[in-house]
Structures are given as C-alpha cells and as structure tokens.
Amino acid sequence: MVTLSKPVIEQLSLPPKTPNNNNKMLPSVIPLIDLSKPDSKALIVKACEEFGFFKVTNHGVPIEFISRLEREATKFFSLPLSDKQLAAPPNPYGYGNNKIGNNGDVGWIEYLLMNITPQLYHHNLPSSFSDNPIEFRLNHYPPCPSDQFQCNNNNNNNNNIIGFGEHTDPQIISVLRSNNTCGLEIFLQDGNWLSVPPDQHSFFFNVGDSLQVMTNGRFKSVRHRVKTNKLKSRISMIYFGGPPMSERIGPLASITGGDDETSLYKEFTWFEYKNSAYKSRLADNRLLRFQKIAAS
Image (cartoon, rainbow, N blue to C red; front, side):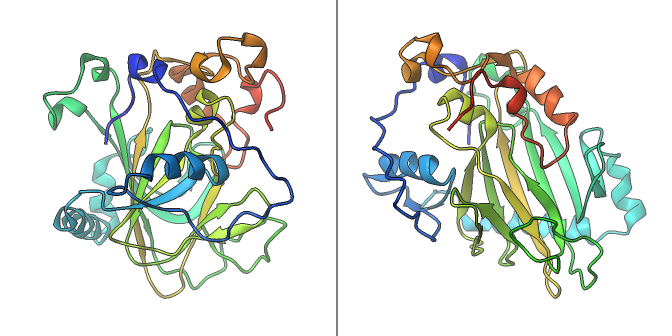
C-alpha cells in the first residue's frame, strides 16, 4: 500500500455524485469490492460515500505473508509483560496496554504501534515519501469475562465490553486485517451500529478524517469501535496511510471547482491536525475546529 503524494492528490477526480434519496435506507451489509472486477473503482467511490468503509477481496497479498505476520504478533503478545515493555512505552510509538492516548481513554486492549520508514522495504518510492513514515499498529484484545470496560453509547445497552472506544481515524485511509474473531463495529448514517463479520483472508478499508476533508465531505470518515469477546482473543493489524508532516490538506480544487466559498474546511498541515488529534479524546469530533461551515 502507498500513500498519495501531493501531485497525485491534486489530480484526483471523482465521477458526478449520485443524487441522495433521504428516504432510501442504506443496506445493512458491508460493501464488498472484488479488485479483479472492472467496476471496482466505481464501487469503491460508492462505498466511501455511503459507508466510509468497505471490504476488498482478490487484493494480491499472499495469504502466507498475512498468516506469518499474525503468528509473529501472537508470539509477541504471548510474552511476559516485562518483555513486552522492553519495546518502550507508547510515546507515541511502542507497546501499551489499557491506556489509549494521554487524555483518559481506556480499553481492554494491548497494542504495539510502530513507525516504519518506507525506504527500508521499497527503494523505488518517490522522494516525497522521505518525511512520510508509515504507521503500523498491532492490536490484541484478550478474552474479557469482566464488565470493567463498558460501552456508554445511548444506542446500546451497557453490557458490552469495550476494547477500543468509538472514534474516527485522522489519516487519509486505514487498511485493516484481523483474525477470525468478531468485535469491530461501524456507525451507520442512520444512527445504528453495524457489526462487521471477520474475514481473515480479506482487507477492510475505512475513510479517515483527512480524506473527508480532501473530498469536501463527499467521502465520510467512518466512526468505529471494537468490542471484546468473552472467549476468544482478537488480533488486528492496521496500516495508516497519511501524508508527509508538512503536507497541506484541504478540499481539492478538482472537487470544489476552485471555488473557496464551497469549501467546508479550512486548510491545515498534517502536523497541525495530528498534533490536535493527540490532544483530543477518542470520541471527539476532531474536524470540528477545522470546519468553515457545517458539513452535511
């Protein structure tokens, strides 16, 4: 997977938006995109508009590679706590457990967040990636028979144990793969939470805050959360695709037609937004301070 550099971003164009029928209920199934099919691009656009989330098959990543990564993750999380803590405290990179960020959020989770330099694994990447380290995260949700961490969302009862609280991702896009244990839920535009059936052979993509800004609100950054399982561990791995720290992010001219009056968001750098995100709580609407007018 690669992140978009500025020249590529500026060339982004989308097909005309399909008129929205407010009386039409969204389907209650996760969009499935077969990347080998000729209509996959159009279906990705549709999924980003309606869900901000989709699943892909025929992605070309060898299953053995994915399985090996899961085995290594399982080995790491099976180590004694003192050994895992040698990976350094999460500041922001390293090993952490229960505490998520520095602002009071907690969950039934342990994780390893890594900062991977692109040049280490691909010598043909463009120079614009030189200040654009890849963030890669491994999450482990152990079985949790306790109700120590509960969901406080009004649409749900309080018997659901929270592994990772509801939030959106600040990056452009996130790519997720998990083992065959359920737990991930996404928040639909109709106000309901939808459980995502696990599929250890596929990848799940979700739109991040930055892509919502770049498309001027057309693509929706999906709110999601993870609930724990009382019997089985869940292991997930997430690639976060973000721009270089100095990159300026705002609605693309190809979307707004160059008319600043139609832009819903102020322009900001990725460093500014990331710094703001680190100071917020998980459930906060991080885009609020960057909005010019209310996004639909």
